[in-house]
Image (tube, rainbow, N blue to C red; front, side, top):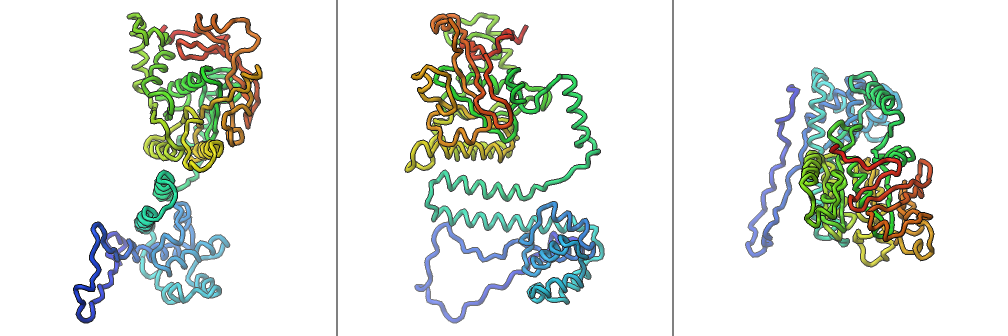
Length: 496
């Protein structure tokens, strides 16, 4: 018998012949765009028989383990008999029982399913169908391919049915459809253990990390923020984290988020000179305005001078050099306003599947549209907050969500608190880290003096940190540069 079954054609039952004469006027008119599909789903019986035979001959050894590693379940098999036999092999293996024709017969007989599995003669004949198990991986891939084709067909049919009958919003339906198809793709990815001594394996990576730590003396383990004291408190931004940065309008929350983005884009500790991949959803500002701010902060050229057209020749050169630096970085900006969290999640999921993202920034949370207008705004924001946390866990990356504070801290002339988050819902509960930006209290400079100088004293309050300390960090906000810096560090021109 041939050991390759790729070209084997599935059995196709002949179409039943009509009996008698069928009157033309009794026929239902065929609607445009519809075609009856009575085709047999993709499958390959011979490949299914061969992989089962290989498992039995191998006594449930490496071949069955490979099936398990590739997440093969009984439903991967088309024939019911094969599903039952494979399920029995899994259960026998879990019980550390030998797998052969006799043990399979006994196991299935005890459960009253031997007849449904084809009987003892069928099981006994399976092993006679192959001469060697050498091609078991090839047979397994055929079985998996046919299963995924069937899964695509059934998911497609369900999508068509949902399109006719789904009662929720179109955003909810599209999110469901995208997730269903993405789940099929994810099923094809297997988890794999690594031998620690392999080249570029865990041992080599651990040694490289130790070397980097020794060189940098206390290097952070997450994505750096660009602020030394903040990184010392948080050890960077970590996978699965939801980080909320909140402030009253005009305090610089978008600017500090852009500073975090710049630090990630030009970080050389994770991907060498390539930097990290960042996606920013801007529900308020345009991509052009955001890029202008990034150029100003990176080049140390005052934004107002650029906007007024009074930038000097050397400043234009600095801006050109900054633009060149950004040209090679992977920053994606989506500036479509009024998006729902489902739309944002779908866009992020598509981009993440093509180019693995390292960080997502959302500016800002209270501008996200709700998916259900019948519920309160607090409930809508709570849904968005939960979804952002779920996204962070799903993608395995940190997500920064900017948020606005209400006026209570100003009315009461006090430092802001987490409870001051507008339409807070579950933001406080979902967030792993909450940072609040406040004006420096107790300073003698007036707002007018700060405005003239273009430099503002700020305090970054770490109000919540699930796995670390809380506290306050003094910062200086250079408004014209849209740049935050630490008091003990001078703002240096990167071109010098």
